[in-house]
Image 1 (cartoon, helix red, strand yellow):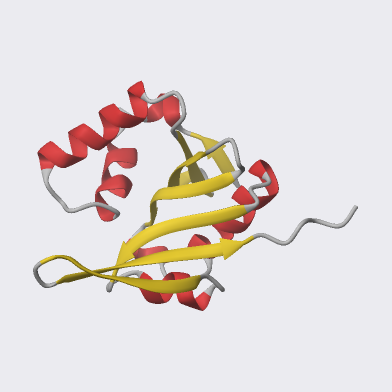
Image 2 (tube, one colour; image 1 turned 90 degrees about the horizontal axis):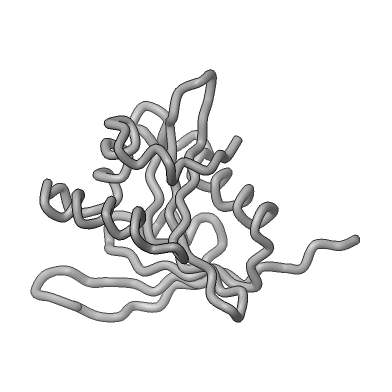
Length: 143
């Protein structure tokens, strides 16, 4: 179940998960946490299983109902079990976006491809690091 964890940004378990989704650098981690603290438009939800935080997803939604996934992570012991996909499905239900977009690298692009995102290469954004734009058009829920 997804819960709003923006008020828990200072907890070590949140920082640990967030670190999985960014370049592991203490300065960058602190900057990212501060971005979420200061950015009213930024939201962060966590996925709990048996009272333990095992995943998180950070995002923003623009006025056109486009959800930009900024960060998504699952604890290593729980990867490959559908929790990343589950977080996205719950977000669709909770926030009702028209479209979801994310930018990622070669390490994570298959995750998005495997759950139905359209993938477009952005080329090498910096030497040796190809980036990808991942887009998912959300089907409207039937009443």
